[in-house]
Each structure stands twice: as structure tokens, then as C-alpha cells.
Image (cartoon, rainbow over all chains, first blue to last red; front, side):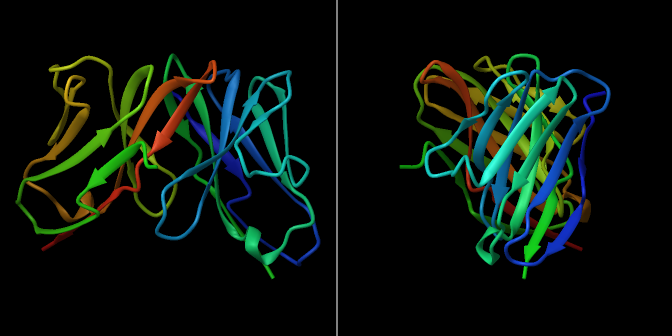
Length: 114
Length: 113
């Protein structure tokens, strides 16, 4: 149980384009999902908390207009990187909260912006 | 200021060795401490600890929490090359009225044959 999927696994795009990443909880409903970013050899940095049916809560320094989050259903949250630039290249990971504190992570999406 | 500090940052051992990874934290409104293993992709859940002194065990891995001294250890006995990974410690706490999870920088474990 508690399987989280992400799509796509890899994406390469041109600078200025937008990229959408999907995060799905496959065998459970998740009212709260999280989006993280991880740069090489660094730990996970929380970008935003996504709550089903309401606006996402963004961490300080994360531009909400650039990283659009939509949690349209109890099993799906999407992150759209708008007008992507090379500095947005990173490993994006979503997680879903199960129970009180445990988070289960998706396999991650590697984004490379040329 | 780091809320979750892991040590060592990197560790190289031979197969069969026993290792201890450390995680100290400093947060208010502590809820739980979680250990994850990260190989090439996203982290996989290992343990969640909420109470002091109760050891959680899964095969060769075990972990314990000390809420008085604000730290946790993750032990791996009889290490295998498949244990090579980055081990992440995360602390869940209540901040600004909501649930927060903060990760340490991780300990990179390399097990050599």
C-alpha cells in the first residue's frame, strides 16, 4: 500500500516553455501532498504543501506564479513549472501524507531545461 | 539555522560492518522523527519514531529516539553493498499552525565488498 507515482520520470525542455508534472496516490486518498526539489548532493527542500480543494501553501522564496500547483482530486496533484529556465533544472519529488506524519514519496521527476 | 543535523555526512565501510548513523534535531512542537533511504530515486520510508526508548526494527536495520536529548540513531548490522545509499532523517513538527517536515542533509553510506 501507499504507492505514489509521478509522471513523467524525465523531461527535457527548451527555456521558456512550461512543464507539468503529475503526482498520483495509487491505492489511497491523500488530502495533503507535498512538492520537494532536490539539487545534486543536497537534501530535499520543501517547495509547497498541496491541499485538496484549496490553494497550495508555498514555502518562503518559492514563487507561486512560477510553480503552479493544482490538487484537483484526492489522488492527483500537479506541479507546473511555467516559463522554465535552466536554473529550474532539478529533481522534483512529490509525497503524500499517510496518517499523522508519514510521507510516502513518488519516484521523482528529473527536469532539464536547455 | 539547520533544524535537523545528521552525522557523519559520509561513511565508507566494508561489508559485514555495523554502522550507526546519527540525527539530532531542534524544533518546537515535535511530532515525530522519520528515517528514509534514498538511492538513485526518491526516498523510501524506513521508520517513524514518536516515543523515546522504543526501538523499531526491520531486519538488519533498527532505530531509536531520545526525546530528552533530541536525537535518534539508525543502526545497520552486517552491512551489504545494497545498503549503499543516502540515509535521510526528517522531523515532523507543528509550525505556524500547520504540519511541517524538515529533512537533514543526509548521511551517504558506501559499503564496499
